[in-house]
Length: 566
Ligand SMILES: Nc1ncnc2c1ncn2[C@@H]1O[C@H](COP(=O)(O)OP(=O)(O)OP(=O)(O)O)[C@@H](O)[C@H]1O
View 1 (cartoon, rainbow, N blue to C red):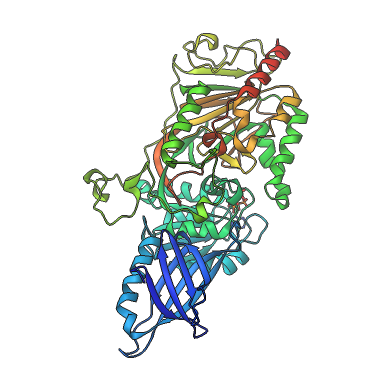
View 2: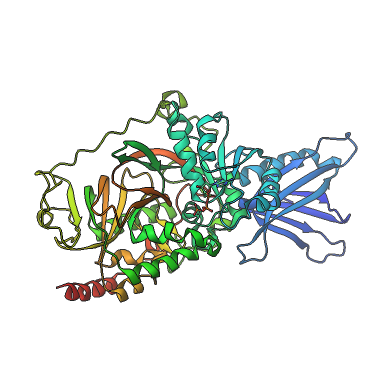
């Protein structure tokens, strides 16, 4: 018997052994006749929620030991369910048992502290309308089994989450959202209005995917587990703080300011989202339907976009993203790629990029102590002043001759701009999609080279292209392959503006999936403004950044496209 083992009496009165070693908890039933022990439970310590010794009932009495874990349905299963095991520890082993419980809890919480205080926001009408029921059956029991203290609030009307965030006490370790992305958007906008906005935004958000589009969860847990509710609850319990950028958007002419954490879209992507809201019953399949419908119509977007570009070379951005992923992952599987079960079975690692964000018992460096952080409001939003160095992309209504109307004389010529990203005068846009997290839904990794908290927003501009090209881009979209298509122009920017050149036929744009009237707007990045929880302190790595295949097909496709355009 090693220090990691403790003898116990099992619920069936048989003798047993609890063992914790190499990131694994085992519960064994011992046999009296020399046969090998029977494994009753084998569980990665990542899935251990709590181990607790009950109070002593007297020095000569056995003590009860409770083990709460999540269990996989099978070795390769992503399905998790709550398991509770109770055993008895005989008086002679009780000191060792106390030490064993500490060893297990340290293995179970290697980078965070247990017993979090959780504000749980539930949208009872989110997604397919099952949030309330799933919270009761799956979410609350797991949080309680882990010893979390939960305050639950149900939203009763639109924008209720915004009101809650504006008025809440800042006493929680985490705000969990049993909803879709809309509630997260509202929470962040509520926080943004507070006089102590910066402090409030240091409370991390942990999404529990119970809406129709749950992009935040897909970005944290990947395509396969993007809708895995118990895994998302595990993230509430032991996720690490991950800082993210937000964007501030100034709506013109009203000068109303909003913030967003995910995306803003123009053109086809607007029709795809708000044009399919009546199809929420389809879950996120409604987006595919909307895309097909939009491609069939291929209605050009009429807009003038000005971009403060940092980078537009796709090869450079892809190489940087792959390098960063390699640093974060350390040694990888033979053949590369992502272990689909890494979030369930791997040992929880401290984030490479933000070790100071982990709740370790080590004192933080002086500059990162709470006292020195700014607790005040967000900086005020002012209209942006694009100058000569900004890139201007225009997709004009067919009959427009006078292109000078609202273009300032300082606008640079596209063809000579160092960051034009292969855009040519006369190209027509189909959509613009700007984002702060790689996946916008399970089906679309729109910004596969995006780095969180980089101080930039990624802008993809899809120009009008033959329908078969656009349709063939659906294949591989979940892993970001359309990035390589030359009809998709890609810019990493600090800020941008978008002016509507046909308000009648394109009245709206979307912000984190919510539709708003579009006249013109100004977007700038709020670097590292908010934080989410993530099990390994980062977004889930897509195959795009972990598998280093070339993009020969994309290049061939784009040459063909050029031929068709000329
Ligand atoms: N009780 C309520 N009645 C009506 N609307 C509500 C209620 N609670 C929240 N809402 C609104 O529901 C909208 C959608 O919320 P939620 O984030 O849960 O996602 P969803 O629409 O299912 O999925 P997604 O936004 O990811 O597509 C939000 O705009 C919110 O204001």
